[in-house]
Length: 184
Ligand SMILES: Cc1ncc(COP(=O)(O)O)c(C=O)c1O
Image (cartoon, rainbow, N blue to C red):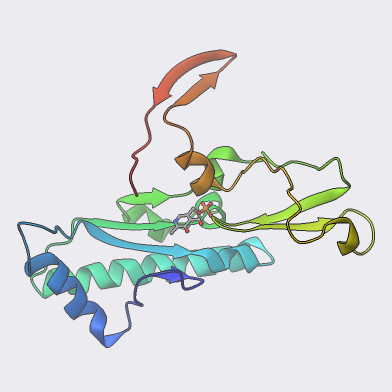
């Protein structure tokens, strides 16, 4: 389940339980229900920390309630997880009952670029970069359809997918190599 709706079903959807049951039980040789995941992207629209935390609490509670309902219905569901950098930056106690958190930008905080053409990147999703002029309205004549802008992708998912290994450094030294899970 995701907000904005990218994929999945809402836990309140009457079909959610039967879908989870089908994933868990219908083809045990081929598919395993590992857990339930919710991405609360709506935290990006929150104007203050209490609003982020209210959304995070609602999301964590929805995940945990759904996992409980699944277990009561006899459907094994080991993992309860949620994501979004704003919620992970301002966690609420309910989130400690989750088994995983999936922040992306959180790992790369602050890595945003300016642009020599006096544009700035104001948003990035997996597929779209959103730019605006630093001063005044954007002059579209300077950027006809087909223009190519070079952006260093900082969207966590797209960036992470491009690298086979992460060099983790602290105090000027590489202290660990992380090998991301590929193939999603
Ligand atoms: C499903 C899903 N989970 C996690 C993330 C990472 O989110 P964030 O960068 O807010 O931590 C994204 C980002 O788009 C996402 O789509």
